[in-house]
Length: 121
Length: 145
Image (cartoon, rainbow over all chains, first blue to last red):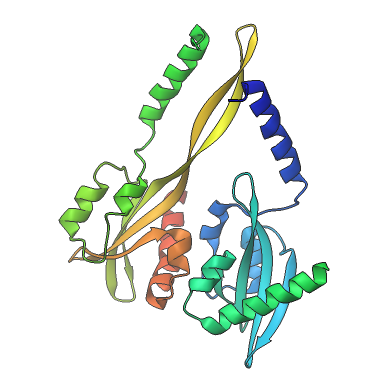
């Protein structure tokens, strides 16, 4: 088992590194969200702009995705807010989108993720 | 390894302070709740946890009873430096909580919904997500009083 000083050093390094990630959401903030909120209201409630905004047209439905990072303790995960007709329809981790009942929304998120990967490259 | 006396005092103080905190809900308790849980069974399951807030509220001609709890979700390792006068690094396990809510219909006390605010706010059943939006306003008003 590492000594307390080594563990403290590890925690400090992780804290410093997580500071480099920029603004992140925290779990407590998620309870501020309600279905039907407009994009601007969600930004005001969360107190930060999304890292990326993506518009995806899927089978005649236009979705708007706001991408955030959500702090999960030591790590951060991608977290998405999905809007349709300027109203918040769903929000969650990618795996949560996968199991929600609207499959077109799920497919639209897939397109958003593919496009995001292309932007990164 | 033998604990330093000051370390023992600090740990004892933390235990005493922890005794003052409201009892949190545990995951094994919520795992025992289901759609068919009767009101008396529900009270027995939740029995050992202390509600943070409880209220009755009206929405769309219905009357509801809501209770909020701290749900113990994890334990986070924390460190603190204690100097008496020589300094040492102490490891403390800090519990992590999230808000949890249980809603019943009145007067029947039939269980309607249970989950975190986040889970229920995005529930596919619009009647639940709409109810949550209203309930959050009521709870915020209660906190402001």
